[in-house]
Amino acid sequence: MKIVLISPPSPPEFRVSRGLMGGFGMAVNPGLLYPPIELAHVASVLEAEGHEVAIHDSDAAGHGPEETVAAVVARSPQFIALDSSSTSLDRDLALARELRAKLKIPVAILGSQVTFTPGEIFTQDNVDCVVRGEPEYTVRDLVRRVSARESFAGVEGISWKRADGEIVHEPEREKIKNLDELPLPARHLLDNAAYRFPGVDGAITTLKSSRGCPLDCSFCGYTLAQGLRFRFRSPENVLAELIEIRRKFGIGHVVFRDPIFTTRKDRIHAICDGMIAEKLELEWQCETAVKVLDRPLLEKMAKAGCVHISLGVESGNAEIQKKHCGSKLLDKAQAVQVFKDAREVGIETRAFCMIGFPEETEAMADETLELVERCDPDQVQFCAVTAYPGTPLYKMLKGERDFDYATMTGFQALEGNEHMSAAQIEAKIREAYRRFYRRPHRLARELKSPLRLAGKVARYFTLFRKRA
Image 1 (cartoon, rainbow, N blue to C red):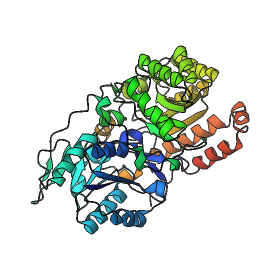
Image 2 (spheres, rainbow, N blue to C red):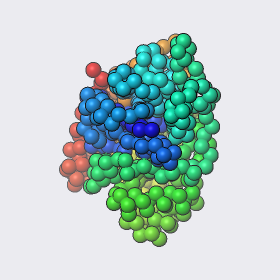
Image 3 (cartoon, rainbow, N blue to C red):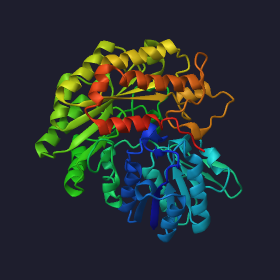
Image 4 (cartoon, helix red, strand yellow):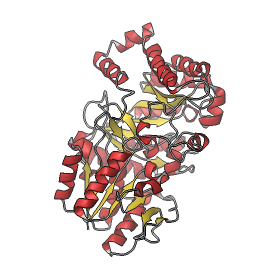
């Protein structure tokens, strides 16, 4: 079959990176453009089945909805699957609906938002099917049914609408146990030169070397999409992909998209040893937690080409850490030491922080600001706590209320708590940025890289853009 996988265009107000926040997506710096690596994984599985697959990345192509429709229709596909995000869901569904009406072919949609609100997706004739959870084998089995002109009934991991209007939620699909069985993502279907990261010269790509996270933070979409059990690819399998990235595609910078990259230190040592032995000359970055880093590992990572680590600080308050953040950072002295060690071995750091937890007071938020100032990372990101559908936080807060998914940008406060209003939470985030970057020694450091500083300032003034 001829199949097109689509990463829809971002809203005009801001760029959406759909793979972030565990597949719920978030608004990002306009200078950031990640490849739709989830679609590339799906594409490789479909190509292994003998299908003719194309990936249409609207943002990479500079396409809005009209250009995307025209480009996809011109390919005359027999099946379409679209990625989605929370904040762009209405636009994603509108695009799916138009393509379905024009092409008269089965249309599926995937992503964490639709996984945890599947019934809502069928309120109009938007799609034929929702792909819930890990998409690779579910899309494969769905395409097999479409190719054979058979019913969707019984395909694990989907929700679909019968002719009589009944919404059918098929049983959950078991998570993929052996990730090494998956073929490498189909980067040959992407315009790899289009993808970029602020402050990095040249093309970048992303790589998922593991799935799942045992920390179970109340707000996290990754545990929903990937599960609590840590599943990982072997060092040899990861190295094979890194070699392909560098030697076949000529890409010099990799962003690992694992929730907690260094969960297994021995595995990371092995991956780093392989990169050093192969002399790949790759620069790379990752996300992880303070509690699973130490000086020897940082030294090995730096030697293997690691130039940046994003660390989940989340909150400086012990009560919030235990209740909402998987207790990933209870030892503040250890946190300060890890940031110091990273700086000494030549690795830049970013601290991820959140403000607006249900029971958080301004004083508790100030503890986070104080901790970040002590750690003094190279960059910092303050987000508004967001209750994505399906998370423990969402179940805790929702009650009888309905949240506006379009506001789930990662920076807008959906609502206040008993101590701070939504406006006060957003004001606290602005204060946090100003307080962090206006410190004299910090300003002196930032002025050494004026272009990067200009980018940070521009980003600050676009953080709270809202959908029209």
